[in-house]
Length: 391
Ligand SMILES: Cc1ncc(COP(=O)(O)O)c(C=O)c1O
Image (cartoon, rainbow, N blue to C red; front, side, top):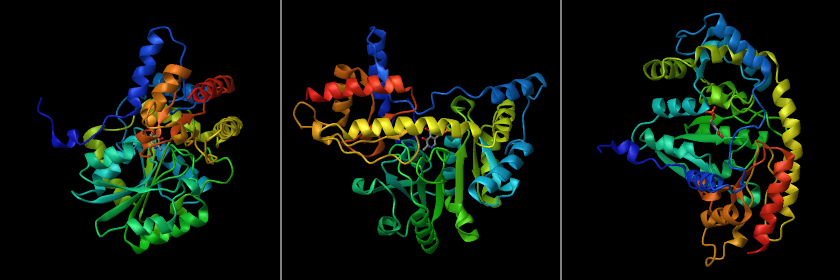
């Protein structure tokens, strides 16, 4: 095999270890409840599917402009103005095949060898690997669990070096559910301006903020907007994870470069899927609101259950659909040596699949996803409690 150095730098996801084990057990007929996924349990709404089917029947099956169909870029500009209070022109928006590809394109167009990007931990698994793929260096900034894993301007300021090029922000956060308050985002923006940092603001979970309104950092001021990439997707908000549609909004010169990259790689996001997304926007947020109301009940339930377990500490997730409790009390260094062994134990003994915190850069925690039925959650929590009691 003759691989590039670039691909050798990238780690496969640790979540795969648990997923593979869960699959193996299931194939043996063991009833496993899985809480490892990252997508809503709701189906894509019918009005979105129908719009895509209509587009297919009308022959909208050919290449589209690389940055996406103009109607969708226009509709997004309007939606971002209304929902996020940021004034982007359609030419400041590119439609990407998922937020993940949007992020990868951003790192590709801004990073040179040795550039550092600050990634607050716990982090979503792909940031660090994408940065490495693009020759950058992920600088992990460990967040304070006691402060609910919320990034602060004070913490940020301490890790900036002359090589720091950008900051990754993810609010609401996967995996912790932390939401950075508006006042803190304003201070963070100030630090970024002062230190000449770009901001990559991943707002994929913006529709799922349970205790406050979502706030977009680019809405702080025109100056902040000029250094920010606002990243988002239809994936979680409209339960369209398999459609592969997201967007990046940023100053036009950046969008032009992202478009060049997109034109030379994927050509364009899937044509008929974009018409489905157009229909999703016409719903004006009703569908995500319905999911949010449901997820909030589930969030309250899993939080109450976890903190009722002796020795478990957890901050209350403020957004997204994950909870990230600290279970280090059960890692005794003998029978259970680390969180991977703990999640393996929960799988084999409790028949529940959850992801170890170390996959997200924080040892001793687990990530449980609660965008699944209340029935599954009740059964899963019972199984987990029983298994933990035996330790
Ligand atoms: C924080 C975060 N950003 C980006 C993505 C990727 O989204 P998409 O499916 O639109 O590529 C995910 C998906 O899990 C995520 O959790």
